[in-house]
Amino acid sequence: MESCKIMVKGIIQYNDRYLLIEKWYDDRIGDPYQWEFIDGRLEYGEDPEKGVLRQIEEKTGLQAEVSRPLYTWSYMVGEIWNIGIAFHCIATNHEVVLSEDLNNYKWVTSDQFSQFITNKNMLRDVEKTDLW
Figure (cartoon, rainbow, N blue to C red):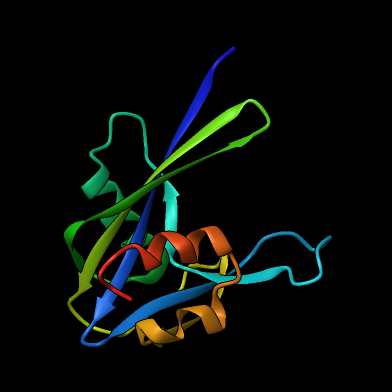
């Protein structure tokens, strides 16, 4: 049986800073909290741009606008094919109210991404954009 999950990622900018969130992954690994951008699954039939803005608002309380798509990615987890679209988004303010599933946040410059993000594939994807 084929199964596919469509994801969106919001790389949120406010002035010259970008929002990173600290998310819990798995307490069986050495560092269960990891820094990344806002992401989540699209609802069935949901427009990707509306979906990323929904994820941003639900997880951070921020209002934002989509600037443009930046890159796509995909990976397999068991029999599930995960496909994603990353969007550059502009926040209208910087006052973050995190949802309960997130641990912490930071506004950083793009040259600080590699100090926090440990996912090498994500860093490689972001390096291909003009945000770096």
